[in-house]
Image (cartoon, rainbow, N blue to C red; front, top):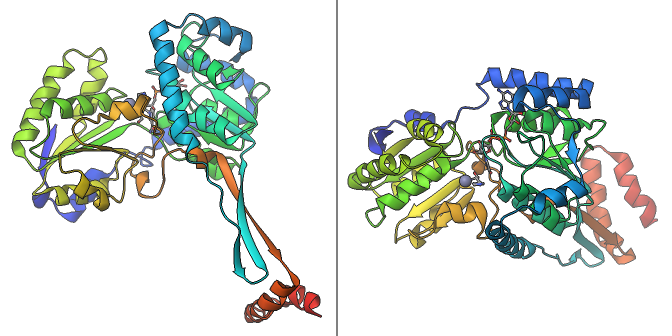
Length: 427
Ligand SMILES: NC(=O)c1ccc[n+]([C@@H]2O[C@H](COP(=O)([O-])OP(=O)(O)OC[C@H]3O[C@@H](n4cnc5c(N)ncnc54)[C@H](O)[C@@H]3O)[C@@H](O)[C@H]2O)c1
Ligand SMILES: N[C@H](CO)Cc1c[nH]c[nH+]1
Ligand SMILES: [Zn+2]
């Protein structure tokens, strides 16, 4: 892992180390476009063929239904069932509290405006399943979708080697009341939900994290179809900001946790202490040895770096430029840093708050903006699954009060018909 000294870096160098590999990757862009085009043209036929090519599975059908879901879910071990139940409850409690009803506002006497919330009718959830199947993502997307009241929830996840899905996803489906899981992964799943195929229904908005193929496909269909997306939620990232009150073993465990997701994950350590950086890197090597996904994890660590800063405030300045998906404040002095945070997907405070807790069970959503998109996007929440529709009502008194203002503004814009729509009512 490379170590930089913040004060030695120019502004340009800081911006350059904050860049993630993105749109410059034309190979991925081209491949994704050809996958998306094939699904648009050939529908199910293309999905069967991509399952064979990318997932090495010859499927006989593209989904498993309620009966099969029940059968598969029945084999879930008791401890996993209990853990999913607890996570489900916490995530549900946190997201249910996000529901809010807005007041009607009288902007002028007789002019009343308000907003009402309506669920997005048809949503598509992508549950990653390439290097690791993520039932936690199913909960993170399925819970707010069901709480919001989305009528049709289409779920896609790559087929496993037996041409089915695993018992954890199946159990999540049962808990969420979802009766079908489509065995489709990667860019082809995103295309299927955007265009619709013989088997996979078309949706209005696609949610979920995934690898670079999935993320690129979401961005592509957003610009070429009427389908919305939650956000670009690509390879996982973490930035740990640590001072001398931090514990190097804990920091190393947090860096490795996100590195484990894939070779293109990024794990950044920013510290006020050279000693903390050195000890953390030693711990990374020690803990890495015992991990089952050692190779991939080591690659992600090798692609990451550490930054030595003068103080925590300088560390926050760097973090805001990097805009991490996850920010861990490994310091006893986290309170004073909270107001300084401007760009981050989700924040973990203090030395006893591991990011893994948020990945699985504390209640916050783990579908978060990566690649610097935390500068402009929020993570998934209940709001992501609804639209807010504005309403207004104007009474006779309201029309008298607002009429002249609209008439004058319409005239200023040279839009006479707009003016007339007021004047005709005032006569
Ligand atoms: N940002 C977030 O909120 C968040 C949350 C969870 C996971 N993640 C990320 O999600 C990702 C999951 O990735 P994954 O790969 O394990 O699963 P995935 O389900 O995203 O991708 C697997 C699919 O990728 C496709 N694919 C694989 N190789 C391909 C190739 N060469 N060409 C075209 N398509 C190909 C296949 O169709 C396969 O089914 C990780 O990078 C992880 O860090 C992000
Ligand atoms: N860290 C991932 C979000 O970047 C979420 C996740 C799922 N399972 C484990 N982790
Ligand atoms: Zn994770």
